[in-house]
Amino acid sequence: MKTETSKMQVRRYIAQDMRQALKQIREELGPEAVILSNKRVPGGVEILTALDYDATTFAVSSDEASTKTSAMDAGAKHSHSIPSAASKAGHSQNQLDSAFEALLNQHLQSNPQKNLDEDLMAAMRSEIESLRFLLKDQMEQMTRENWNARNPVEAAVMQRFEKYRLSTKVTRPIARQVAQHITIEEGWRAAIAILRKQIPIVDNNQFNQGVVALLGPTGAGKTTTIAKLAVRFALRHGRDELALVTTDRYRLAAYEQLKALGRIIDVPVRLVEENTNLNKVLRSLRDKSLVLIDTAGFQQADDERRQQLEALESANVNIKKLLVLPCTNQDSTLRAAYDLLAKSRIDACILSKTDETMSFGEVISLVVEKALPVAYITNGQSIPDDLQTAHAESLIRLLFKQQKITDIQVPDITKTVRPMTNSRAYAGN
Image (tube, rainbow, N blue to C red; front, side):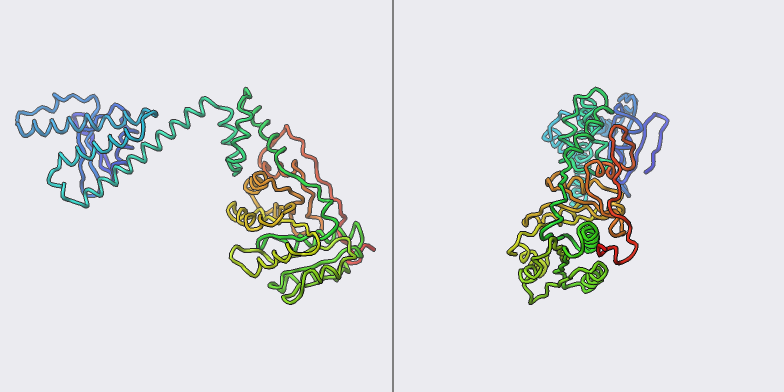
C-alpha cells in the first residue's frame, strides 16, 4: 500500500481492496476524514480523502468539472456516513446492509459504462462483503469492550482461565459466581477455589478388588498403567491375590510385556484369543482378589475392537471400567475417546502422561463437564512410583504449575511404594 499527499491536504490511498484502504484511512486520519472519491485501479482501489474538507476549494468554471465535483461531493457525503454508522454499536444489521447497498449503487451510477462488467460487479460485491465483516467485527469488539468495562472482575477471570485452555462451558458459570468481588485478585482466588471443588475425585480403593478393565485410545499408556497397578497391588496384598488378562490380540508386544511382568511378580497372565470366551477366562481366575484387564486401543471406525467392548459389557461378572486419558492429546481427541466409550458405563478415569503436557486445561474441562471422576494420575515411566492417587489439589497444581498460587495449600503427595530392588520384592517376599 502507498499514499500520496498533495499541497491541498488531499490524500490518495491505493490498496489491494476497500477494506485495507479504509482501515489505513481510519488509523491515519481518524473519523474526520472525508472520502472524495473511490475507483478501481490496476492492482486494487484508489480512494481520495481530505481533512477539513471545503467544497469551494475544488470549485472549477467548467460545467463538466462542476458536474464531476458534485458527484465527488455526493460520494464524499455518503462515504463519510459509513464510519459514522459503524461507530454506533446499536445499529442493526439491516441498517448496515442498506448502507452497503447504497454504496454499491453510488459506484454503479457514477460508472455507467461498467455496469455490464460482471467481473467488476463481483469484485465490488466482494469488497463490500469484506467491509460488512470488518464493521461487524468492530461492533462486536466495541460490545465486548463495553461489557468488560461494566464487568471487570468477571471479564478478568474469564481471560485468565482462557490462558490455561479451560472451556468456557466450565469457566463462564464460575466467573459469574465471583463477579460480585471487589477486586480482580479476590475474584480470581474465589474462582480457583470453586474450580477445585468441581473436579470430581473418586476413592480408588474400590479398584483394588474385583475385575477392573482399562480402556482408552491407542497410545494412552494402558499397558504401562496396568503394570504400575499390578506391582503396587502385589507389594501391598501379595502376588497370590492378583491375575492379569489382556484382550489385546492385535499387538503381540503388549501381550509379551504383560507376560514379562507376570514372570517378574509371579502372577498368571491370560490372553483372550479370538476363539476364547472372556467369561471362561474370568471363571478360571475367580479365586483372585483382583483381576486387571488390559484392552486394545479403541478407535472410532474399528468394528473388531468394539466387539471387545461388547464382550466386557456382556460378561457374567461386574467389570469396573477405568478410562485412560492421555493429557498429551488434543481436546477433540480426548472428547472423541470419551464419546466412543460413554455408552458403556465408565466408573472413573486415569489421567496419564501428565509429565509430558504443557496444557492441562483440556482434560480438566472434560472431567468437569462430564462429571467423570479421577482415580489416578501417572507422571512418568517408573514402575510403580509414577502412579499417584488423584487429589483435586494436585490437579489444580498441575493446571496452574506456571503460576504461584499462595492462597491454595497443596499437600505434597508422598511416595507410598518403595523402589524395586529385585524381582522377588515384587512378588511380596
